[in-house]
Image (cartoon, rainbow, N blue to C red):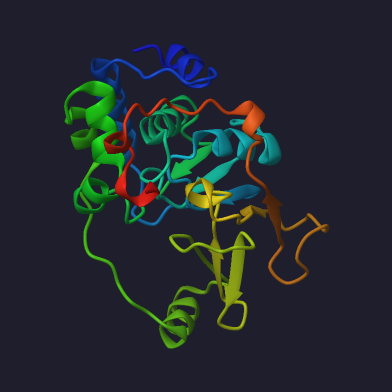
Length: 251
């Protein structure tokens, strides 16, 4: 597998769908990388933290314009790469290829949408079926355990017990791109602008600096970098021939 060739195909406008066998090789390769990574990722600063993408490929490209290209910028993605957007296959394939190409410059965490149950409902399953004629690509990426409901008391206990300053999460739409709660100890990042192509929200990435950097938050040494959706003039929307081709959540 030539990962540079894959990245070239996936960064065209519009992005090209990779052959199924190539996607399988990508998944096999990235599994080899991830199995050696700790369950708790250790990420060096400076780093830019990215929230939900949800298959909004062109907005992912816009994010790279705002935050910097990989590997020039060190990225931490919080998950939820697929579902709802038109280009979940290409988005997840590109991020996987970037992880293979620059393993020390991109960290991929798993969100609740990287699961079989959720992706069967919200779009990734159907997109794989339309683009490949089968669900094999969908099967390569799935499975996740249950979640955990928590509040401020749990946040305080976890931060104190692990000597932390801040917890950063995604998975929740923020109209302003981010939200800070629990006495500035929990921050939610959302990185899919104009979510589902209709919500009108902006998006944010969190840029975390080295201790020596000064132009940042005076307490936690980071900056919220907010951006809007990619212009329609730069997008190519897929052709949907009939109403049945439109996922339920777009109708």
